Image (cartoon, rainbow, N blue to C red):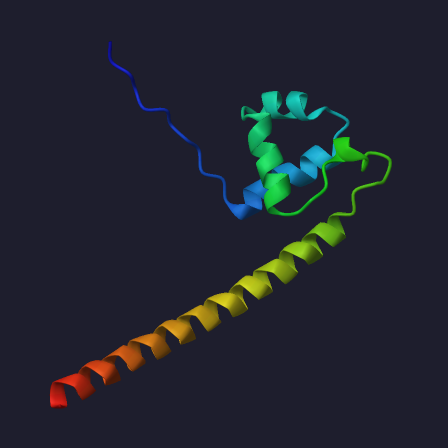
Length: 109
């Protein structure tokens, strides 16, 4: 019996946030929403946790969803990610420079 490899869809951050916004503003349950869009409810739960967004089933359903706050959070997280990536590149360069200097010192001895 031959098994085929399961195909996984990749969703960009923009697509994920679009689904999250739509889910939070819809009256549907998580399972209904996910079934309609063709993905597993666990995936939506994972995205909500990843972006630290409280699920409407956990007590947020009485409050309206503020998409401006979500957009602001995304913007802040993107800025932080950019700064962390720049710092990471700087640290990698410093580490590479340090190892180069160490190798040269050993070779000249």
